[in-house]
Image 1: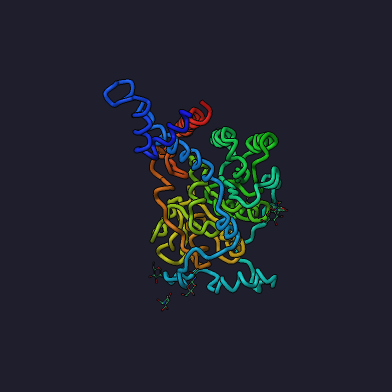
Image 2 (image 1 turned 90 degrees about the horizontal axis):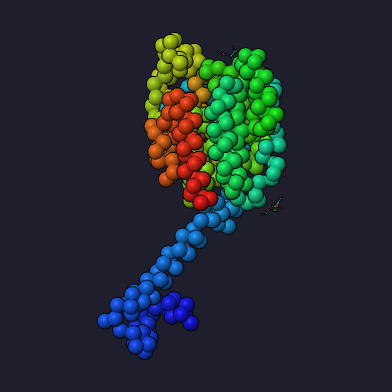
Amino acid sequence: MWMGVTLSCGFVPAWCLAFHKRMRCRWKSTLCRWRMVATFLTPTFVVFFFTLLSQQPSDIQLSREKRETLRKPILPTNYTKNPYNISHPYDINFEELLIMKDSGQEIPLTPLNAHPFKYILNPSNVCNDPPPKNGSLFVLILIKSAPDNFHLRQTLRMSMEKNPIEQDYVRIVFLMGTSKKEHNKNVLIENALYGDIVQQNFVDSYKNLTIKTVMGYNWAVQHCSNATHILYKDDDFHFNVKNLLKFLTNHDHPQSMLVGYRVDKAPVMRHPASPHFVRKEDYINKTYPPYLAGGAYVVSMDVAKRFVVAFPFVKYIAVDDSYLGIVAMKLNILPQMNSDLFSFKDCKDLDSKVIACRGYTSHKEVFSAWKMYVKRVLSKFYI
Ligand SMILES: *[C@@H]1O[C@H](CO)[C@@H](O)[C@H](O)[C@H]1NC(C)=O
Ligand SMILES: *[C@@H]1O[C@H](CO)[C@@H](O)[C@H](O)[C@H]1NC(C)=O
Ligand SMILES: *[C@@H]1O[C@H](CO)[C@@H](O)[C@H](O)[C@H]1NC(C)=O
Ligand SMILES: *[C@@H]1O[C@H](CO)[C@@H](O)[C@H](O)[C@H]1NC(C)=O
Ligand SMILES: *[C@@H]1O[C@H](CO)[C@@H](O)[C@H](O)[C@H]1NC(C)=O
Ligand SMILES: *[C@@H]1O[C@H](CO)[C@@H](O)[C@H](O)[C@H]1NC(C)=O
């Protein structure tokens, strides 16, 4: 009975007052005063508590409407016909190319980029075993790594192991080329333990990043096409899966996106000493079309599939993120800017809303920051 009284008190104050009166309990008495205040406030807390609880699962569960649209591709934007008037081979209509590919026709063009590399390591079961949950978000995290960055990979693996719920919705894969003999041996051992490394037989170097990026897309489309999204990132970026899933769940058209930290009108580096040096013969324009900074961004599977069709016919340049900007332009896709969620300055917001960020320069700093972050997350979930 007291339960009923307590609950109804907050909702029907007049009835509640009458009840207290009947129980000869008056405001003048201290005990009664406390009891009245308590019975008034309890329902508020109950409602508040249930609201909190009921909001938790919505992080991952999608509405039926969203589920149905998830795999229906639309173009994220309409950025009609090369507004930058940038010439880059091939200068053809790539939308027609996509249509030809969809209808199973041969594409009557010679590929401009050879990709003759073979897989050394190919964990082709990562996305099917265990199978993803049907009709929900499923994110593949592709991480550009280098053979000797074992410590960075460990911190990222560690953070995933501690989030068992999110493992249902997320898979991690590291992308690598080859390196010196002793490093390669270690990579083989590491892969035997974790089975999460995709490696092809090109030399792992900064100038070969475009090859690595293309390898990642090709692998994802071939072996992980069940993923609805890809978080593409460098191995020195931290990420927050919970925030990522929340962002995708609340997105208006989750099935079609290319979003990250957008760079507009970036100048092309013409000095041979620059790490981003590109010759005029390889790219003629003075500026790049809008592109997403390569440190971390999210791309939906339908956009990734378009990229994979276009790659052989858009001439490679060595700067991988600018290259993707050119490919996006060819496909008439304008990358979307979200500087709140993709931070290139500091990681202090990682708990609140940020999806990925870089804030540390030395490997040691990255490692200790990750340990602290994981500890904080754990204390929230399990204590
Ligand atoms: C793109 O623009 C064309 C005409 O400008 C319009 O018909 C089409 O619906 C637009 N597509 C999207 C996805 O907004
Ligand atoms: C695009 O650039 C070419 C030269 O590269 C020029 O001939 C052409 O007029 C330009 N078109 C527009 C619409 O600016
Ligand atoms: C290079 O891009 C700019 C816009 O960023 C455009 O005005 C110019 O015509 C382009 N030049 C060439 C040679 O395509
Ligand atoms: C997934 O759901 C679709 C319909 O929503 C159904 O046709 C399909 O059989 C399901 N697949 C599995 C593996 O449960
Ligand atoms: C890129 O990889 C290819 C294939 O292994 C290699 O021949 C080339 O030297 C590499 N380029 C650089 C700059 O390391
Ligand atoms: C995932 O995709 C693979 C092919 O890439 C397919 O064989 C498998 O049935 C798919 N699984 C689900 C659950 O859709």
